[in-house]
Length: 386
Image (cartoon, rainbow, N blue to C red; front, side, top):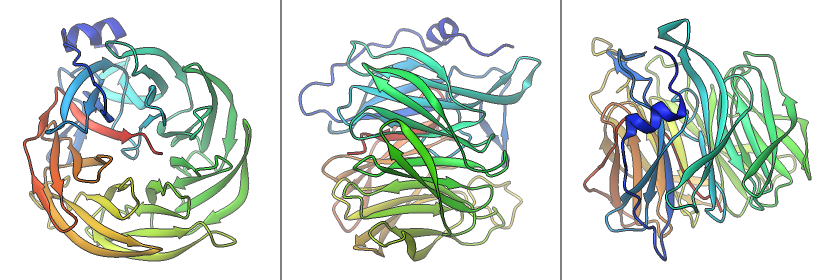
């Protein structure tokens, strides 16, 4: 079987009615990977893969609702920040780190795609797909909507794109390390003059200097924990949060706080969260941090480290200090999280269940609601950053 063409994906998804977002809506974009299923702890290609696509969610609706679907290549490989939404919610970007191997439909091979999704058209649609680098993973858009960066996990680079009228134009690459250094996710500072890149291959977090469309490695690396992966920066630009996923050996892993006001920037706080913190997401007001924790739910059932559920944990944020607030059980092999603007609703995407799990949050506890069912496994999830 060959990789889905756009037409094939459209037919596979079927006719999906577009529901108007309406005034006061908040867009969340979830990327579904049809090529990945978990078979007793092993990421496997199914016999008849579902079509990759992105789902458009109105996160401010009560309850949150699915409003549209757009065919686009996606991938679970890399952090769950494989989606980026512009500050004005006019467009989104979604990356694909791998694809079905044309020579062997039972295997995957590297991909380099980044697709532009028009969120203002009715219905939303894919405008174009560009090439980033091998293993294209984490992606972010600056606040001005003029620059995008893509972390390429399998070639040690970050791709730079200028953005104008929802059109990406390649503007070079930044070399960080060799192909095993594993650049995983990249985030901009609010002023757009700096970016951070996690490198899970050699356990570094690199600082980039930005001047217009010129992006350079600042020759400054921060050390947080073993295999820094997902990454989040506060809207004020005072801290960044990084999830350190470890080596998957059943040990408790960590989340670290980077003080961006320090000169030079440095890690100032690290807390233990459990097995494999896959995703980190700050609430819009910066007061809370959600961490999706695998908790061994992605391991073989015979493993001594297997648990039949994942976790989402909430920490309060006070300056550079984190304090545990509450947690809730979630499904298996869960990926990203997204807050509503009010901070009262939290989405968590779970691969095995093919759903976005919905929670209400009152500052003290999480209350589960009805999930949003999907046609493939949700692998990436973002809202507008700013």
